[in-house]
Image (cartoon, one colour):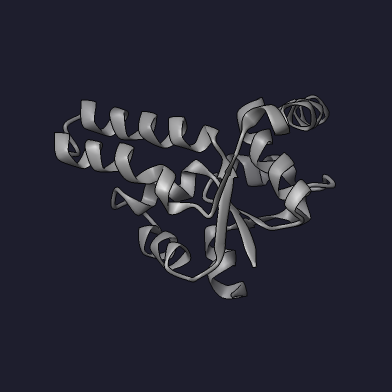
Length: 142
């Protein structure tokens, strides 16, 4: 099964946060993981932010940047998703960054697993809500 993963989940593979163990279980689940290639920039930026605060070492930040792209079965170019992501962003009145993940989940007919509670709340009652699973929902669903 293909699963779309966003940066809120993928970052937990590298830095211990709430629900990191669930994120690692998803990584090790044998599912085919995919994401827009935006995920590389988002996870590296999140790594930089925690490095800047002194919460991870130089080596840990380097590990993030070296491995993030290697942990996915497929990374999809943003240009392939941009038209649909923009349409979704307009419909939701929500930042396009998140909508790239929704566009990919829609295209792949695959669940989007996220730890972004703001996104989950924004999707309630929309056509995209059934596409999205919180990290804790994924763990109980599979």
